[in-house]
Picture 1 (tube, rainbow, N blue to C red):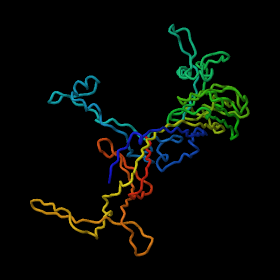
Picture 2: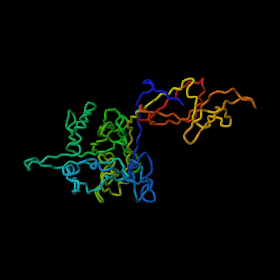
Picture 3: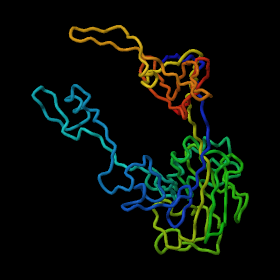
Picture 4: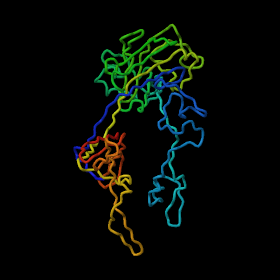
Length: 410
C-alpha cells in the first residue's frame, strides 16, 4: 500500500445547475403530485401523509402507532449554573444540596413525524378596517398587502408587479379579491425557472383556459380562453407564489359552486383556479366538474467535489490482503521475536504470481500485480473520512499509470 497527497490542482469544486420539472393536478378537492396516484396503505396513506402531500423524511411508512420521532437533548443541561439560567428563562426549578437548581421538565426536545408539504390556495378578499379615529373605514386585502414589498422587487421586469395603481394599470390589488397559489420551497428549491410556468383550467374535462409566463417577465398571459393576451396574474419566482387577479368569466355555460355546501353557482374565472387545493374551504359536490393543472420547472444547485487520484508507475503494487502471498511456498525465516516467555518466528512467503499465461502448463515470469477496488480518502490528521468503491476492480501493474476521478455531491 502507498499514500499519495492530493495537490491543489487535484481537488476542485464545481456546481451543477438543473431544472427539475414539477406537475400538479387538482381535482375534486384533492391534489396529485407529478401524476402519481394517492396510494392508501393498510393503516393510513402509503407514506403516512395526507393525499397530495410529499413526505419530507419518508419515515413511519404506513405506521399507525409507535412512530419514529425527532428529538434532541435539552441544551439547558449544558449550563453549569442551572439556577441562574432557569430563573432567566422562567423555567421550573427546585433547589438541590449543592445550591444549584435542576429542571423538572422533560430533558428532551421532541418533534412529531411525519412532516409533509403540498401546494395550497388562498382565496383572499378585502376586509373593512377602521382608522385610528374609529370612525373612518378603509378596505384592505391583508395577504396581498403583505406581499406588496416582495412583489415590488420584480417591478423592473413588469409594471404588473406593482400592486397599487401605476401608469395605465388602475387596479389596486391591496384592496381587491385575489387568488394566491402557494408552492413550498421543497418543490422548486432555489427559484422557479422563468418561462416554465403554465396553468390549465378544465371544466368537465375540457380545457377552457390556459396561461403561462411566455414573456419570461413574470406576467401570466392567457394563451387559451375568452381573453387571450390578457395578463391574469404574476409569478413571484423566488417566493414560490402565484397571484391571480383576473375576475372575468372564462366559461359561463357551466356553473360551479366553488364554496359552501349550498352556495351560488359561479362562472369559471382565474379567481377560482385551484379551488380545493388545501384552501380550507368547504366546496359543493359540483366542484368535481372543475379541475386544474399546474406545471413549472424549479432550479436546483448541487455542489460537486471532484478529486483526481493518481496511480503512478511502480507504486500501489503491494497489498496486505492475505491472498497476495503464496502460503504454500514459504522459504527461510524472518527475524525471531523473543519475549520473556515466548518466541515467535514468521516464515517468509513468496508473493503469488497471478500473471496468466496463454499456454497450458506454462507459468509466465513473475510480475507484481494488484487489483484496486476501493480508494480511501484521509484528512490532514490522517483520519479516514470516506471510502470510494470502484464499479470494477482496476488491474495495476508496475508499468501501469492512470488517474481515477472521484466525485462527491456536497
